[in-house]
Image (cartoon, rainbow over all chains, first blue to last red; front, top):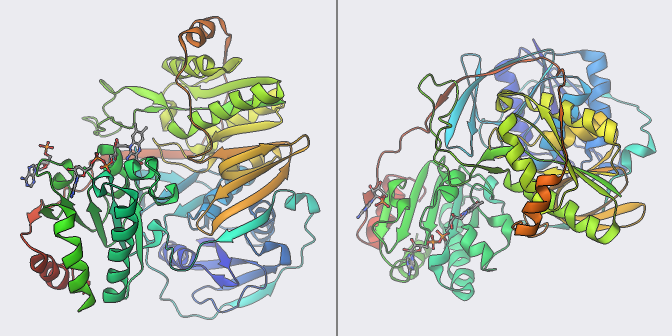
Length: 315
Length: 246
Ligand SMILES: Cc1cc2nc3c(=O)[nH]c(=O)nc-3n(C[C@H](O)[C@H](O)[C@H](O)COP(=O)(O)OP(=O)(O)OC[C@H]3O[C@@H](n4cnc5c(N)ncnc54)[C@H](O)[C@@H]3O)c2cc1C
Ligand SMILES: Nc1ncnc2c1ncn2[C@@H]1O[C@H](COP(=O)(O)O)[C@@H](O)[C@H]1O
C-alpha cells in the first residue's frame, strides 16, 4: 500500500525528522512517494519511488496553507493509503490541515508501531496507548527521534510540479525570523539534555554552570547537547521558556537526561520520563527524581559540577 | 470583534494517571479536572482582547455534562456565553472529529478569531488548529507567545524549532496559544456569580466516523531503579562503561 511522505526542508535540505518519517513510511509501505517542498530544495533524497518537487521562493520558511495545497495535488495524482509527515511544529500544523482536507483520521506525535498498532504517550506520557487507526487515507505524524532514518538507497524519480498557487494561501506569512544559533539545540532534538532547576539557586549559577556542563559534554562526546530547565527555573526568569521540560513544556527522550537541582514533580517527569538514561544530582535523598533516575548523586551540585566539568575536559 | 475559544476538560496536571482495570480507559475516579492549560491562555486572551476592542466572546467545548464545569470557569474568567457540543466519552474521539465540531460551531458563529491551545494535554494532539483553519478557510497562526491585534490584521510572535518568528495575517484567523501569551487570572467571586447567569447552549451533532480506538492503555515501562554514585570519578566511569557516551 502506498504512502505519501511530506519532506520538510530547511535551507533547501530535507530535515532529519523527515528522514525518520520516511524510515517509518518504508516500514509501513512497499511504495513510497515523496512531496518535496521549499525554496529550491536539494534533490538528494533516497529511499522513495518518486518525489514530486515544488519550489517557490516564498517557501523559505515552510507555510502550511500552500504546502497543504501541494500535497492535495500529489494525492489527486497518486492516491495513497497513508500520508506521513514528521511531527515538527510545522508538521503538526500541516497534519491538522491534511486531516480536514482529506476528511481523514489523524494520529500525531506517536512514537511506536508494533503489530499494526500505534504507540503514543497519552496524558503527558503518564500512560501509553496502543491505538488502532484506519482510513483512506490516514494522516500519520511520528514524533522526531522516535524512528530511525531510512537506510533504503534507491534513487527516486523526480517529478516537477507546476502549480499556480493562489496568493491568498500566503496571507499568513513571516515578517521576521530570528533563527536560533546552531549551538542552541532544541531540547527535543538533543542526544543529551542538561536540565537545571530551582536548586541551582540563582540566575548566575544556572547561567554559568548549566551551559558549562553542556559545552563540556558536547566536546567530550561529540553529541548534540541542549540545556533544559524545570518550570521553577523558567518562572524565575533564569532561562527562556522554550527550554522548559515537562507537561506544559517540551517532551524529551534523549539518550541521557541530567536533572540537576530538580525535585522531579509529576509535571516535570511527564516531560522527561521516556529518556533512555536519567542521571539526577540532588542534595535531598527523598527527592522524587530518585524514584525515576537510573543513576543518582545525593549531593549539592556545587560539589559535583566543577569536578565533573574538569574531568570531562580531560576526556 | 467576535472571538470563539475552544477549550477541553483535561485531568489536572498534578493528577496521577493509571490505566483502568480493563485497560480501555484510565481510572477517572479521584482525578480532578481542569481547563486544558494551553486553552486557558486562549480564554484569557479573548477576555483581554474584548476588554480592549469590545465585541463578543464565545467559549465552546466538545464534552460530556461534566464539561460544563470548565465552560463555567471560562465564563467566570469573563467569556460572554458558552456552547457545549455534547458527546459522552468525548476523550475517545479522534482529533478530526473534534476539529469538525469546532468548525461547525465556527461556521454558525462566524468569529473573526478562533483561539485555542497549541496542544491538548490528554490525548496529546496538536492537530486541532490546523484542522479548523483548513475546514474554515481561515488564516492560521500557531504557537503564539504574543499578539497585537490591528483593525484588519494581527501581528504575532511565535516560537518554533526554527527560532523566534514574527508573523502577520489578516482576519479571520485561527490562533493557537503557546505558554507566555498572557497570565491567566483566577476568576473573582464576582466573576463566578456572574457566570452562573450566563447562557450555556447545548448542541447535538453528528460527527464523521472513523476507525480509531485505544486498544489498551499501559503504564510507562518500569525503570530499573536508581543506582547511587558516590563521586565524580564514579560518574565518569558510568558515563564511559555503562551509558557509553564517553
Ligand atoms: C499547571 C502546571 C503545569 C506545570 N508544568 C510544569 C512543567 O512543564 N515542567 C516543570 O518542570 N514543572 C511544571 N510544573 C511545576 C511543578 O509542579 C514543580 O513546581 C516544578 O517542576 C519544580 O521545579 P524544581 O524541581 O526546579 O524545583 P523544586 O521542586 O523546588 O526542587 C528543587 C530541588 O533542588 C534541590 N536542591 C536545592 N539546592 C540544591 C543544591 N545546592 N544542589 C543540589 N540540589 C539542590 C532540592 O533538594 C529540590 O529537590 C507545573 C505545575 C503546574 C501547576
Ligand atoms: N536515599 C534515597 N536514595 C535513593 N532513592 C531514594 C532515597 N529516598 C527515596 N528514594 C526514592 O525516591 C522515590 C520517591 O520517594 P519519596 O519522595 O519519599 O516518595 C522513591 O521511589 C524512593 O525509592
